[in-house]
Image 1 (tube, rainbow, N blue to C red):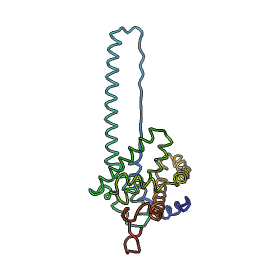
Image 2 (cartoon, rainbow, N blue to C red):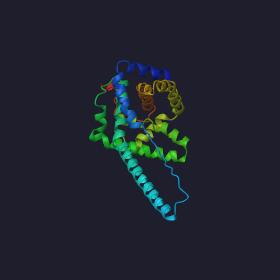
Image 3 (cartoon, rainbow, N blue to C red):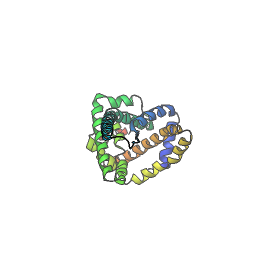
Length: 253
């Protein structure tokens, strides 16, 4: 059974000689998983001396403005969605692979190339898209089910970092199985970083960027613990995650 202290201790050890590279990778993950939004409004005063013709002209202009705004908004939304699907998802999986490899002291180079490789790319994009759709549908039910499923599906990009062609439904199913009985502990693990992020916010907000590698490295350690538990309990096989038994003379898992 994993503990917060154990995961964090191992994460610190991994980052000790590898922090700045991990920092750059964390920036990429932040771009891939982050989001923002904005809104605006407008107001105008109407003079009571305006006649019906003036009112009609201004009404038409207002409708044209609203229509143009909605079209622009739709274009921006579609563009953001396409970028998220085609670019952000492989970047996230590549970043997760970097931290998994680092945690095992394996070669952590070319992780992003791995995610964009022709044999891996479509599997990653399709699986991450299905994950986003499922999370969106769960969130429509209510906020709490969406949060719970967010924890249930958290291991999907890590699973894809091991085997991008495992299949969308299988990756989601396996992540759900891996996190079964661990969601509350994962939630508490997230809470344990709040103090660090608050300190980062106090440091002109830039400090949160320097906390991210520690967070990502800890979550990679969490995945390795859940992965080992899943293999030992027969939830999946070593070969399903492209892993090998060290007793066979292959890479250690």
